[in-house]
Length: 315
Length: 302
Image (cartoon, rainbow over the protein chains, first blue to last red):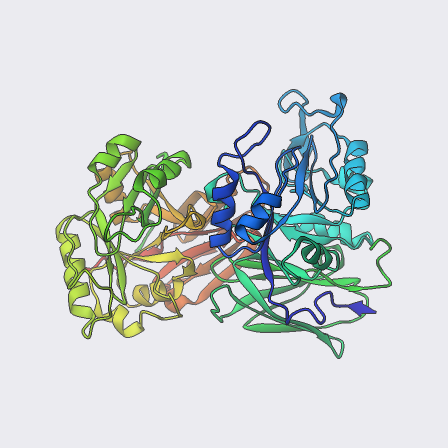
């Protein structure tokens, strides 16, 4: 049976969120600006949920929650050769000496989309995923397959138990996402600014149909009640009478023709529609159907998959 | 005869430029941050040239240019209902500059500002023709104003429809990319890559000759016209192997050809008037080339 993760959710006002932010200038942080102006700028840009995710450094969000009145998730970015966002828990996985990554000294090799670092650390990455999960957190594999810093596909294939991958973080890593889904692993996709400097602010984000609290956001993210946006907003995504109906608008309410691309198993493009809305009739053998919508100026929206319950072995 | 504005461009080191920036926190400015802070960030991002273009307010660039080592054009943004970056002029030609209220006759003062900017050796750029709604600047308005030199092809929204409308009327104007910077989240969303020497007269000459393109993240490697064949080569500048969607547009915005490849070509059939290319990758990053045009049909309005 096909399941729509947005069913019953679209009446909730979605919370604009980004969980990949480097901020703070104290010891161990990797930010360029203090945490407060960064949170303030995100708030001014309409965000309601954030995570300060510094490299291998947990940030206590409590003081900022009170001051700014937005949902701040506790978390950090696990960082060796592989990067992993660990959200919504106090879990912290140490990096043993032999796992510490020395860029420039550990060598490069050819990856599917360009050169990648040769080193791999599957075991410790799996430990970070497990530690996060057992503490009630949510983990997201960062910039998979992207470039030299991307988590390589063989590593992604070797680990399990994570919740999502970043599909938009500068690049669109749809290939990797379809690869994961097509193996029968139901994982969600997210978008991230990977904020380090002001020009990274508000590039792409997640709209989450949940309560604007840490618990509410995590609950919605676990059930896939969110979408990735780079400027567009989801008006409708319904599954009825064997059809998916979808409508997307510009972030400012602008209604115009967009390219709606319906994508199924192995990344196969099932249908492309250029219109103000679109629909797709499910044949039954798709495993999943997800949407990648693009406006003429390059604004984007990526939905979670409407999925065949019977196909997915890991949920 | 078809003319390629990029002929002889690709030997030059391209410059990164943006001309629509609101900054400054003093009276009459419309920026949210100090000019120094904004310029420092653009400089850090590798921009070679900018214009502080506040609404109906001229900003003297001299002291900032020296301080930041960035080429700053004089200019302002003409602002009523219709907006225009008047690049390269220090004379604010706007009736009642203290207000942005719409005018009963929008054409006459807009035209006076265009002509004033041109007389100063400047480069008037018509802004965001589809903001806040599609055809916010009507076809009638676009047809009534003359001698503008460029239009924002990308400024949040896409200006291609208005650009095609003007080009299809036989008037050659160039496409510009603008941040319309007000807040940090507008920074470096779209810009211009200009084939010029690193000085203002050379940049201005290149802009007037169409020796530049608008980008939201992709880089043009080549655009050649070899008898009747247009070839376009594009890269993702961060070394990521990428496939691109190429759209070739002709008169009246007609889509002449669309391909998904690493490079693309288009063979002129004759009678196209112009062919311009929009390229996008799957993350939504774009590039807008200037038109390759038939000089019997299109010319810059004198």
